[in-house]
Image 1 (cartoon, helix red, strand yellow):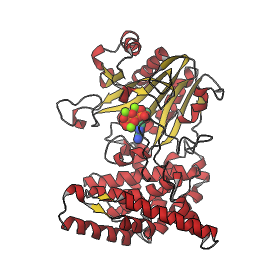
Image 2: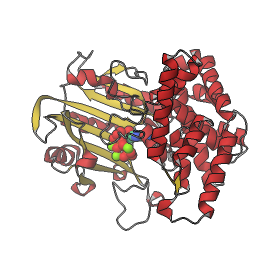
Image 3: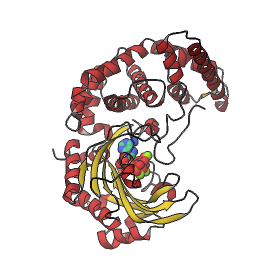
Image 4: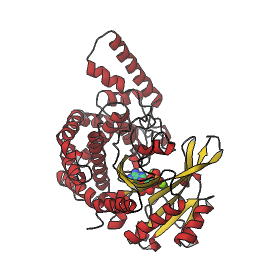
Length: 474
Ligand code: ATP
Ligand code: MG
Ligand code: MG
Ligand code: MG
C-alpha cells in the first residue's frame, strides 16, 4: 500500500532528493552539543549549527525524517487526533540557498502531484504581514485568495528570544464535517481536528535583537516540518494518528493484552492511545541512550513509563506488560531504525526494570490517592479550594514512586489542586538531607544519587519552540 507510513517517508525523501537535497539521517533524540534543549523536538533542532553558521552543512539543501519528542503535548495525547509525545517530522531545509518561491511550489507539488491530494481539501495560512507569501501562493501556485488565511504572530511567526526568525505558512487538510466541532465559527485554526495542520513552512528571513527590532538576513533560510503520522493519517483516511498502519498494530497488541476492544468505550480508547504513544516514545528514547531517573530526560522517560503503567491499570492490566509491547514497536520501526533490533534486549530490560519497580508500589499509591480524593470530594469543599497537602504529595512521590506530574494529573481529573509551595519545601529538605548524608559518607549511594537527581526539575519541560517552556517545580 503506497500510503503506508514507511512508503510516505521514502516518497518524501526521494522527492526532495530529486530537487537537489542531500538526505540526512535522523539525529538521535538526545541533542549533541546543545544544552538549550532536553530532547530533539523538530527536524530543524539538530541542524541549528548549520542555520547559525557555526558549522558548514554538507550541502545547502537538505532533507530528513527526524525522530521527535514533545513532552509539552502530553496532555493532548490520546484526546486529540493529532498529537503524540513521539512522532517523526519530515522536513526540507535551505541553508541560505532557495527561499519562499521554491519552498511553497515544492510543498504544493509534493502534496497535490506526488500524493494526489485534491486541492480543494487544502487550506493555507500565512503570517498577517507576509504579502510576499500571499502573492506567491496566489500568483505562482494558483491558490484562490479565499483559501489563504492571515494569522497573527502567535500562530504564524517563528522566533525564540533573539536570533534568526521569520514568518511561517502552514498547510491544513480539511477532513470534513464529521470531524468538526460544529461551532458556527469552526474553520482553519480551530482547536478541533477537522482542519488538521500538516505542514509548517518557516521562512527564516530576519535577525531579531530580542527587543522588537528585525533586521533582514542577507541569506534567508528555509525550515519546514510535516508530521509523518499526520500525513499518514490523512492519506489513510483514519480517525487519528494511532490508527495509522504501523501505529495501529502497536495499539492492537495492547488491546490483546488488555482484552479490550478498541472503539467500544471512549475512556478506554484514550488509555489505549496513551499507552501506544508512550511505549513508542520510551522505546525510542531508551534506544537513544536515555535511562529512567528523577531528573532531566531520565525523568521524562520515567514519567512516560509510569503514566503508561497507570493507564494499563485503568484497562485492568495488573502485571508488567509494557516491556512486551516494546517488541511490536521495534518490529514496526525497524525499517527506518534498524539499530532498534540490535538494542532490543537492552530496551526490554530497561522497561521491565522500571515497570517492576513501579508495580510494587502503584496499587498502594493509587489506593492512598483514591482515598484522599474520595475524602476531599465528600467534604464538599468549593471547587477552587480543593487541595492536596504537600505532605501527601511528597509521600506519593517518595514512598510510592509517583512522578509529581502524574499526581498533579490525577488530581486535575478531580479538580483538586496541589500545595506546590509545601511540596517544594519538602523536596528541598530532602535535597538538604541527601547533601548532608553525602558529606558524612553515610547512606546507600544509589539512593542518594536518585534523590539528588530528583530535585532538578527546572529544565524538564523545556521545549525548543517558543511558548513550550514551563517550569513545574521551583
Ligand atoms: P499543533 O498546532 O497541531 O500542535 P504545531 O503548530 O505545534 O502543531 P509545529 O511546531 O508547526 O506543530 O510542527 C511542525 C509539524 O509537526 C506540524 O505541522 C505537525 O504536522 C507535526 N507535529 C507537531 N506536533 C506534533 C505532535 N505532537 N504529534 C504529531 N505531529 C506533530
Ligand atoms: Mg503544538
Ligand atoms: Mg499549530
Ligand atoms: Mg505549526
